[in-house]
Length: 278
Image (cartoon, rainbow, N blue to C red; front, top):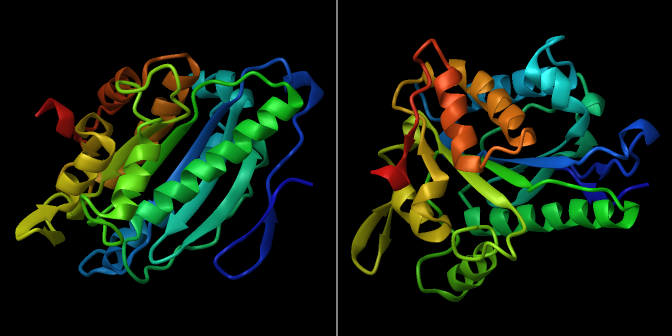
């Protein structure tokens, strides 16, 4: 039995702690989806939370049962997935599982509370550490873990310069390969929803900072992608994420993988802007 954790309703969940013998020789690729479900994701009109639930369900369906003969299908035996949601608190939606063991349905996420991003980052890093411990115990090879973070708002549980901010920024320095390439334990990719591109400001020392500005300062601008400003963006998000995962399992660098995934979206509805590229 894997590590026991609680979901948002207090139900006990366990990480998958077995890998089929036929797969033990395959390098494992862990992907943690970190999802902001703060109250603003329920804002009208056209609440983000509906798109988030649909997108997550579609992504998990494709990972559980990818299209036969697709590039993803050829790599899917290597993929492990965990889903974590956060608002004021942080909860597991789905514990660590091999892609083929993802359940056919997920609990619907409900908007509530604030945006405790610092707490969520710390929790996500701990869940990555849990998976790496499992790999090391089982003597399994693994590729770089990735945290795929989706948010629409500004951090409200820490501000630049305070103790909590400095603590999580210090820990996140291990995530940014540009500053600590030898000791990097994970890579984070932040996707900002259409509604989150230009709203939700926090005052810091008399200066208003947007969610994007705060996140850029905390995790690095190169890690942040704006998903355009149209709600139709979500229609291409599912394909973008599945292509991204496929590229990473082919050992693409993260930024190259995101760029290639964005190019693969031919309908033009998913327009990404990497904040670090200006």
